Image (cartoon, rainbow, N blue to C red; front, side):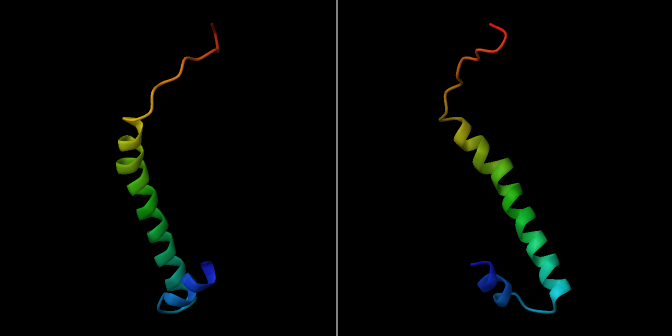
Length: 52
């Protein structure tokens, strides 16, 4: 999968690395600021056994 992604990107290796870094950053941003808060609405908090 990663080899196919690497071959699909245009340009030399240094440009591919920059594009992949930006793509990973965009995915992480989407997860942390959109997906995870949306999913947390459906999860119930559990009782902690630490300190009790």
